[in-house]
Image (spheres, helix red, strand yellow):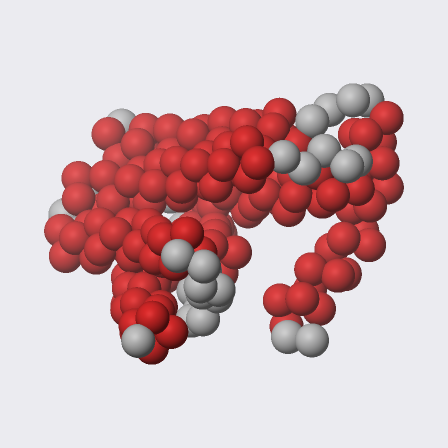
Length: 214
């Protein structure tokens, strides 16, 4: 059992009572997925507001990070709800995948806007590269599975990207008053990690598919 499966098992044990409550209330996984998207849009709005009107108020960045992490729980809840409530469907899988892409692109866009409008041009470009990598990791896997190839190799998949982004933004807000270093490093460094590792994973998956198809 790898670390992701181990953590997932623990989290499922914690949220199972909540899942049973949602089933009793007849709440569908698609609704949970949509709520997760709305939360990520709120986080994006906080980043953009901070960029345009309150660039020195890094607590807004911190709150955005907290909301991203909170929304990440909904990404686990919808899948668990679908399985426990016997509500899995082909459309649900499509809906979940599509809204996940929107959620991630929205939040990274918000971070890129904040960095670009506040003089961190290089970091803004890196964040755009992270956006490209996050899409390509998912796209290559989807395209591979369409060709009948299992393609889960690599690292910096969506759960890792969400945690790295959310924790970084949260720590930026927590350390907003620091004078010994720039608190935005907590945002910039994760963007570099995602930009490098996500695109590396996409290339790794392409190489994996090449071997399988060859």
